[in-house]
Image (cartoon, rainbow, N blue to C red):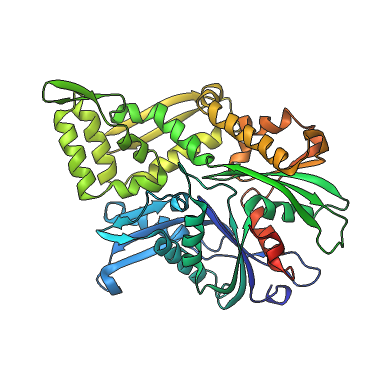
Length: 433
């Protein structure tokens, strides 16, 4: 493989749920996905997760792993680990300052650099000594009132020293590069990238093969919700009522609603593991003693204390995947004294996410407007990202475009493939976000 790649150049799709790296091919060759070693052998897709555990033989007393190795370490010793996932979703959040892991504070850029260094360590040297790396970024970041300037500062700090040149490109534009490499004729292309934290859209003019600048970005839009928001809807309906959501507690001579912030944090993959700190657990214990249904709060405490975020995520995503191909499926979860078996129909699930899908559809309209084109001007639509497989999401496009116009594929790898193509361009800054 090494004879067919361009050394010193790389594209990296740093995703909310998964990350993928790719190296440009030599002249006349396609990019290569970087095989990343793990407990089950090398794989192209690397889970965007970190696992921490105490180890006296490690400098500082805390060991850390990322990707599949992080999952392996967590499954070996779940109660003695801290498993962080979806932490990319706080990149643009001013309310996020530090994550406390075993009482040690980590800024976003510190978590990000730990992740990058571990990813590189599993790449067999293919990501060492880079001259240029092109990194994907969402059009709009996840979270309430995201600050793109803050996210840029954090990304810059995270990637400092990782490569001599660092360029950021909108993720759907990178996917457009990937798809354009298959086209043999000009086209106006709408790309929709549905990830874990964001849904992003780009309209791109693809020119004749061989043209010096073949992909011309015309317009972009995005919304800070995607697959993780769908997960929250599932938890809100099936799990949180059993943990006290909607319940009440006594305060002196009054009955008050239990503060919703606890449940919002619990259903956010980036925050759930961070609830396992003494302050939050003490607050929940005081709340349990005054709650009208103390057992519900006790179940929440037990789930946090037993570090059950990963198996809960697994149960939720299994249901979501099943409902992409089946009319109904069963949500099953067992842990910390909680047993749930609930049949969910696709119709029910789609009613839970209807408002979110409507916001995605509006962002499609916004991208067309930003590009100054009408729906009729679009020749082809390329859908990518895992959430693009959700039938309600696909209907946003099948209701507007003919089936033969809509293409998909490489749901987890097309962005990295496109970023590597951009990295191989003489001047990647022409597509920089």
